[in-house]
Amino acid sequence: MSLASQIADSFAAAPPIRVVNYHNTPAYRADDYDRELAALAERYAPVTEDDLAAFFASGHWAGGRPGVIVALYNGYRNNHDVMRPLLERHGLVGWFFAVTGWTSCPPDDQRAFAARRTLALVPGEYADGRHALSWDELKSLDQGHVVASHTRNHARIAADDADGQQAEIVGAQDDFREHLGHPVRSFAWLLSGTWGHSAPTDACLERAGYEFLFSDFKLQRLPHARSSANEKII
Amino acid sequence: MDRHDAAALAADMARLGARPYSEVGVPMFLVAEDLRGDLAVKDEGEPKLAAALRDMAVERPEPADTARLIEVLADRHILGADGPAFTRLSDEEVRR
Image (cartoon, rainbow over all chains, first blue to last red; front, side, top):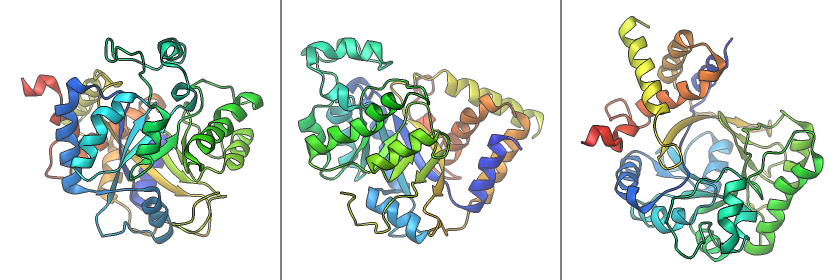
């Protein structure tokens, strides 16, 4: 059976989770994003991590409307400047998957950091050289939106590189703890790794305390996740 | 899948593949998987979506096409049966 057929079987057994993925969100495309978010908001409810945990626990979306996850990857500053106001205009929750090492990188070094790690920049977008979300912006987004982990360095780490995996998975969580004052609950790996694909990776995910794992085809609630939808992992 | 539907699928795959992914919204459907074991997603599944994906998979069985097939499925269906394809809301060539 092909992978697509297996996924079809999963969709037949349980409803898929609707997601729209964004990366850079430059201002010159704001009208497009506005139309897209308006169309989503007409049909779907916003989703927080508590909503997602409750969906897994109960099998139903709270409020009766299905949820949609608006995911913003790589921690671009334009996600805050362009998408955040649009999300809030339409009553949606953004899931901001940040790269903690990039956020911590001095603005003068951010372009070089991005070039080494497949982070595309919009030419001429920010004259001050800061293209990544700042920690202050992430703290602000942490109120009302979802701040999530997309590794520390956006680096491709081999499955057998234990130190690299520790840094990218657990180290990123350490950064969130330091700057936000608490761990984050969701993680997205670079190469679409799912739980069960690599034992060392799974061990890192558990050590870091992530609850949700996003990959190309799945959104997994991890086995060590706590049972209460409202219980913060400490 | 008849020849018309197969051609439409190929056209959608090509159109989506040509979009500037780093700056556009990409709709996807993700399998919800609870690994705790003691909990389960209990809502009924979506057999129409499943059937549409199975048809596509028969036409394009290559594993490398899987992500694009689900992207086409989500693009066509995320705004509902009566809604437009999601990417039609923003594709420049459509608006011109």
